[in-house]
Length: 308
Length: 325
Picture (spheres, rainbow over the protein chains, first blue to last red):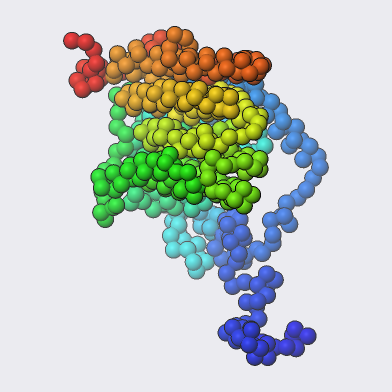
């Protein structure tokens, strides 16, 4: 009966005169009709490679349920919870307070076996249809890691992407029991210390700190890493005051210093538009306290408009 | 921030608290509290770092919830008793709601979880205002609510002492330690409120003095982490030697001033045949004493191996030189 009573007929009734402006029945039946612009829950689900068709499946359709996997997971998480509980009796973050007070250097990531590679994720523009390649493996004698591959800045032919040519390696967020986020607390330190051996290419170091709002999820603090090609190892010390804020790669006007009490991850990106093979060998990534470095933030902030 | 706006906000803070102090009508008291909340928000977001905006948002949510609850309770009280007078709060539902709303405002357990995160995101000066001045107006209202049974206050008080002590146990960030210290002290104040309100005022005034001193010491040495406390001897040696007195006073050790309110509260509780509550309060405040002692240990009682290179800062900054000539 609803279908028979078409919109022009309904709109003759005075109370629903506004319905005259509704031309398309789909506006009323919003929840079931296919949309021109997808719902926000679907667009923010994960990365969609440009050119691929959109998946309109709700998230619970994509999960594979398995009882034995669930039981193993529960056992692992309870084990982690127990360890965390007893670690608090030792001291803050599981270390005695005297260690907190005395430490001036801390090695955060080092590569001493294949298990170290589990903490890292590599990615390149192959995800968006490009032609770069990236691989990560443990170096000789299980002492280092080698990030190598080929950079290619030909953009993918999908009609949407204009630029391409990047390779990146990023640490995974540390997780506590039940997949709660854990953070690195580097507030006792003020310098990032890396021991690397590169091929002369310029890399970008990105530090991802914990944010609160969803629009801040792509915020990163970046700085440059210039590698010197050659057989000698390079000790790079970058003070945290040098890192500047960027959002999705764009440097922001309203800069502030990097807060070190909740750090999620660190990443290295190569995007120097020089096509060809690359290599980066990393011995360790650590943090240290340089007492001679007292700078809070390296960049001056200019007020472009007089603020209240 | 321009001086005009800054002074407007500071004056608004003063006006808000004064309005609440001077009011007998619930609406006016609520308005004073709202003015306080709104005036401190821009002060908290002065630096545009994400941690500051996060702290401000969390603070705003907690305070807005508490204010809405308070307004609802005041309106319900007017509905039941026909009076908007603050001293005419007779209905058990309404004074319980009001107490819980004020507990959330000042950060009493179990409504205290916003406090450490908010304090961590603020500068030391704004944290000082939050710990001291912002507690005055809600405390004034709690003081005037006269419940028929002391159980709620005792429960809030004991929980706060436990939460404040236990929460600060493994902290290395000084602002979070101060937040948990604030929670524990507020617990002591609220514990004795229904038996002897003047003792609450004694405890509150000593807490204000001690917290102000401690915050100011940290501001002068520019320390926000327990590690940076260990090198504060090079900045201001005299202050480094005297700060343990403030810390141990906060911990309630005799013969320092901070012992006085604790002693009198324990005495009053014993007189009221609540010896068990007194014992529990005294035992749980040992947790707080532990982290105050740890701060004193890091700051004054130990010499770190990692001394600052070059000329000692206290020689370069004569305005901070408090050594006798």
